Image (cartoon, rainbow, N blue to C red):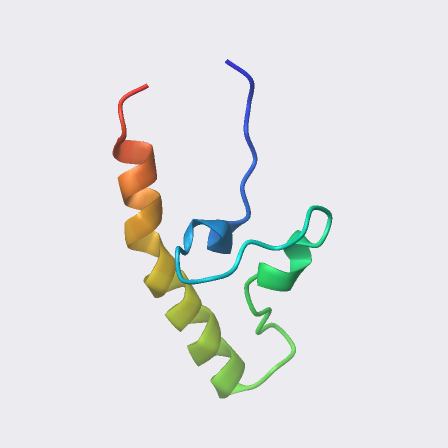
Length: 61
């Protein structure tokens, strides 16, 4: 089977699918140079999508 690479937030069914080549529009917030708020946004994004990723990897091959 061919390998697949997915953007983390592409698993979020509530986000519109970005145009091909514009997947950066759904990238996670990078909190590295930001303040506390950016870290809170990033963890919220991660927590929101995690259950959908678990569902996807739990599907039989």
